[in-house]
Length: 282
Image (cartoon, rainbow, N blue to C red; front, top):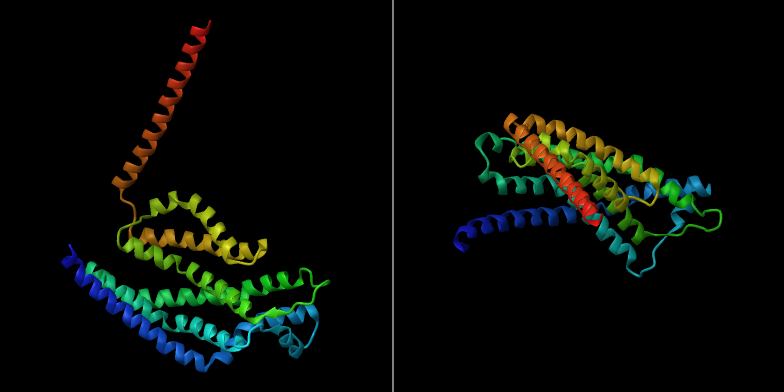
């Protein structure tokens, strides 16, 4: 059994090594531009501070502090690593595809470029949506709340961690159509199954939105709303790639009818048992 797995493990190690190497190279490139990237990340916070405190840009920057001796250096490392993941994403996606490609048909292997380009574009769209739509509302609410009583002094280490969490959350969330396409291509899901799972997906989406966004309803809705729309788009994509056959639909309908009939039988059995018990008691 181990001999059968060995080629796959060797291939996995190769793909992981290439992905790690690309990430390291991109890290050093992004570290060179860390000051520009940090200014880009801090800009939504500065805008919120200026809007709330009615202060100058210089004063807003002064409200962002660090509590560690090497805080600025570690923040630069975090910023560079975050940017490196985004920059290396096309290579990482290509390595994922090349790892699973041997198990695909010839026509499926041709989807390498659309998978890489689509996955990268959707991740970037998610990040941009979070940056230009979600963070202005979220930061404005969080900073405004209690600003009449407290002066906001933002810790840069906490802010960068909070910011990257939101960006990654939206970036990964916007990969839903690509993920659905991938599963449909492998024949693991069809449109009928996704439509049946829709009511559960809504609950999961709101839970994820509550975990990944600031604790205000508006920001959570700004994440949950697009995710629900993306789930609907995913259903359309899956229907185009791997639609449910008539036999599968008939099997699912028969299964639902069987479950309903079983419930009816159990209901009647319980009712008959209750009548018998009443007669015995009389």
